[in-house]
Image (cartoon, rainbow, N blue to C red; front, top):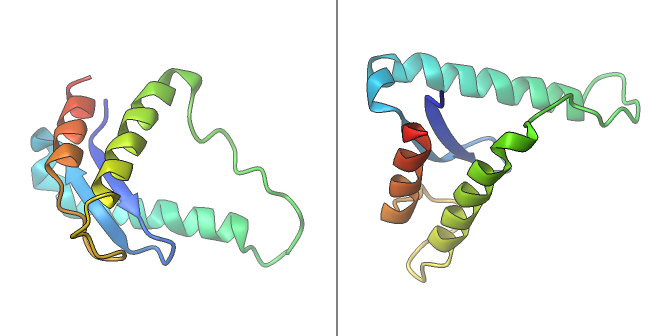
Length: 105
């Protein structure tokens, strides 16, 4: 079950965040979990040991590929809006609808 959909910028700032309506009371906890997850990825990528270990572990399963493809297409459509300013929060009906579809699955 998906409880949140997030799009994060290169500098770890959230561009888009949607939380399943059933979990709206825990939105702060979910945001903290997202930031903690980003810290783990940063630690692996920019780690102190500076080895060439690029393997982060299994990030997605093959079954979830279609979900990420739909999300990526909606994200690209949102960025194609001529009024969108790169780096700002994304406000898109298409991305909102896609997130709701993902929550329903």
